[in-house]
Length: 90
Image (cartoon, rainbow, N blue to C red; front, side, top):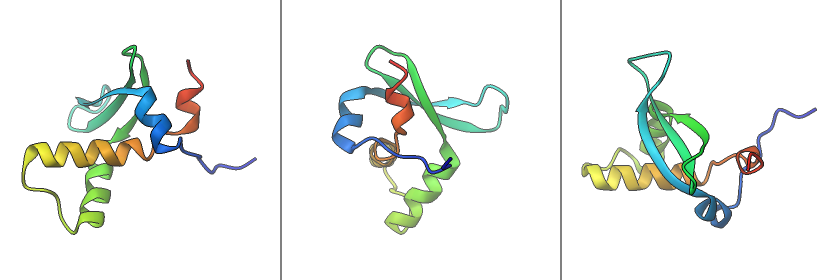
């Protein structure tokens, strides 16, 4: 059995995902997560916000200064990393 995660194609993720919301981790109050919801507002999966921001900073050579740019680029990165199992929950 492989532990390798496969991801949805970006176009498929765009059709599936309705929102990506930054929220407090339910068990760790000082930790933020990016929760991914489908178009019917069902939770699909979540990502550690710090990890996504670190990955974004590495790709971009730093984080965007404008809040709107930062959010848009973080969501874009998340959309490329939606696991295929998230789509199978429907």
